[in-house]
Image (spheres, helix red, strand yellow):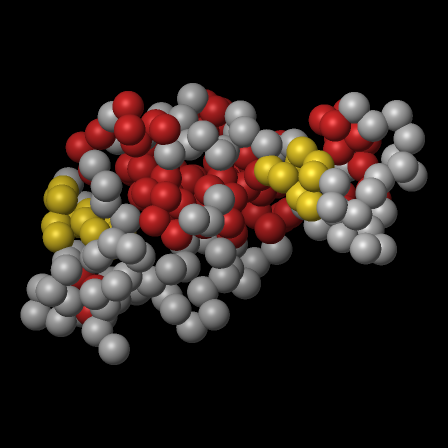
Length: 213
């Protein structure tokens, strides 16, 4: 469990770093990070004059509260609201493991657009208006619980290093067992846990290296 929690070091508490490029302005840099203002960057780096930045200079980029809300809302959207807090903890475990395997941040995992690779897609927000969805879910009775799970970095130790989960049997998502979870099609698939509603496992490490061509 301790090792699993260490995967969260780059989320919430640890800041991102940005290296200033030619032509950059502090306002322009802030625009690259949703929810982060120019003042946020100034304060995080102790900059008295926002115009005095240099090419090659490394800036600390504070974590946006929007990132936290995005992740919490994704927890609810991915099934936590239907199956409760226990399911949300399982989802957070999957997200943490995916982040560790891909090198992507938790926020990137939550907001990822599949671009044809459905196994990587995680976000409930695909094709939807994020702002409207967050507004809707923030009124949900489990919203505060989801935020608590995010902020306390709560994961499910039973899932260990699982990076996938799916609903067994024909569903709206899979008409049959997905190829990455079929031992006949993917020699690296390892089932880790079955809670009767979902099957959890991993399909190779580094990410997806045993998926069929």
